[in-house]
Image (cartoon, rainbow over all chains, first blue to last red; front, side, top):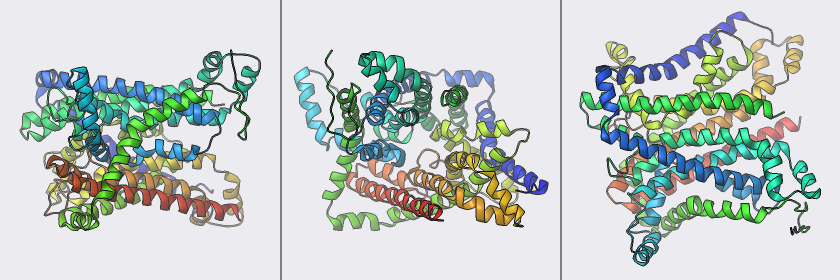
Length: 278
Length: 283
């Protein structure tokens, strides 16, 4: 296209205006608001027992989500990417369901299964009687984990299947024909191909898990024990007092720092994915 | 070592591990997605139609659907325009701060929704960075539908940028040159050559942003104010309220309608994309 400098500069200016207004201002707001009552208040706000317990649970839930979604992503991408079978397209559609479902509905779904009116409640009850335990899913830690796994399930799969589709399966088949065992083939050929894509998916999954709010909010009601950090932020913010709001932003800044850390890692991995893709 | 070679498919299964990996996949998929979502659907179809319509016909409920549909549609449309613009300048121009914009685009994906929610609410409140200026002009955006739209624009912008960007980057410049040689002006070249190429990707991003906005919860509920009177309650908020009041029937009915709407959005855009692809392929 004929280069028109005027058009170019106005488009760039518009882009900058949008980014500054929509993205930079919010970032600045988090920083300014979290330090609104001074550094000492900030430190005190992020080290209350509630915030620390919520941060701990958030990290554990993210770890659980990464482990399950990671295993799922590898298995699903391997079976779908390396083999032909009927219903493949349908299976892929099912895996993408969490992308198009409101997280609140995910929370509702687990309540309908494991809550008092759910069919899973009776099964859980008899299991508890048999084991002499008192496990609960809804309004307890398993519910928090299930909700977090639900929203993060497609991420690793999506990244790994993309790599597998571009790499095909000829190399593995050649190795198998030459007598290599399944494990050898996986670790020597498949995994090296997908490792950066896998890592990228894991980082996306972790970022999503750290921030999940709606699904967990439906399944967790006990502040200080089953609250994740986003729920604790909500509780602090909704308290309405000025100190509560500042404390909410202080707690938010912890999540923001973690998110930006993950973004930087992602930028690095993305760079590597780009090079591995050729 | 035993290795069975199945030849009943199109492609012989040489590689081992199919049963194991598919088994793990189906097990996890069943526990996490199929059973819970299936339970909602199973429960929803058992609700008598009259009860279902009574729930949906309540002003609070259909106002919530109207608000969510309207705000997420407008937000997705704004994102379609600005997302395409951002993708365009990121791909076509080099300018100082390009890397900075590129890395910031991902921020809404990375930022927890609740954090985005309270931050946007604060930003546009009377004591906030933007709100304090706007209030001098007599404008208040918090607790209005415009506030909801702002939150949804924030959440949805990466969808459009990230789906248009790769298509623009791959676009062959020779057609544009041909157009210019034949005397078309910039606008005509954009409308007739570039737009048809990037429109499917733009629409895909639009649909993702629209569907995401329809179910959005965390980033919206603080800036919206959730007033039934001002009709600033979104669908997710009302579902959550029904959950808290143990009104599972109402929550499930709303969830079903929301699922159907999200499905229709994604389906219609898939069809549009298909038509577009056929049109381009048939030239």
